[in-house]
Image (cartoon, rainbow, N blue to C red; front, side, top):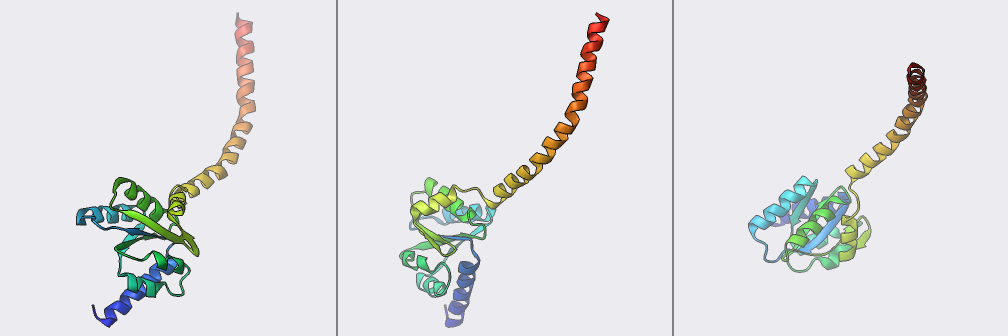
Length: 171
């Protein structure tokens, strides 16, 4: 890899560190190519990505970025799992680590906040952006449906009372 390629890689990593909602750093020693492709596919489905980069270049790219605190985690065979959604990458990494002993989460960063292993696990248990949006939409729609039900209820109540009176008169 020549100097120009290294500079391009540092720029790409810098953009990743700048724009990602969460970055999870993990060791992947012993993972097969098929297992790594499986991890990449799961990350892609969740809206995230997986990137293996040289630690030295990643540390250079981290300089001056909000998540610069993860530079200490970049030792050994590390892989970066990241996503714009602050929860997606953490969920993917946590689920994959449960099923594969060779994939070990070291920590990560969420914006300027450094995360340890417990922090990554806590973030992975949070609802995703889509889940929060659907919850909020449901909450916004609930008052309208309650009002519609309250408006329609008196008419149905009167109809059932008249039906009851009619049945008693007929008997």
